Length: 145
Image (tube, rainbow, N blue to C red):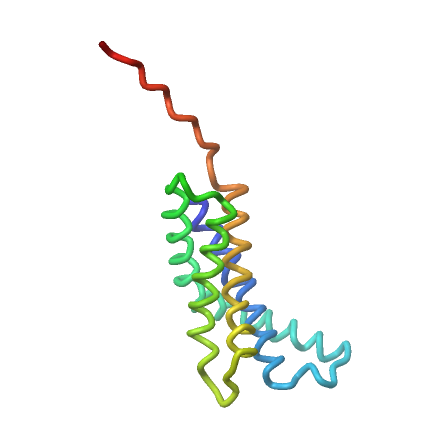
């Protein structure tokens, strides 16, 4: 249960901020930027945070479920699991966001893919550190005659 709460808390927060950064970069907002403009960015982020959670909590929980399933596969190490989650979230976010609008290309695909990759990997890492119980070694099988 902790794993799902971690994904639900971290995913929409970090993903929403990165999505805001990606869209402002795509719009050319960062060409002439000063301190007041950066402050506006954080104000917009604070005002849109409720929508980040509204639209981002279901995908975050789905990726938490994938992470939970992969956690039960003993042959997959935590690092490989984080990379698998990162790859799945990268592809999902890139396909969801990068194909819209007049600008489409490799840079946009990568930029929007990172919107999914970063929160997916961070959530998987935090879940590995704080939500998993240490694995117990398998009990030896006694030989019965």
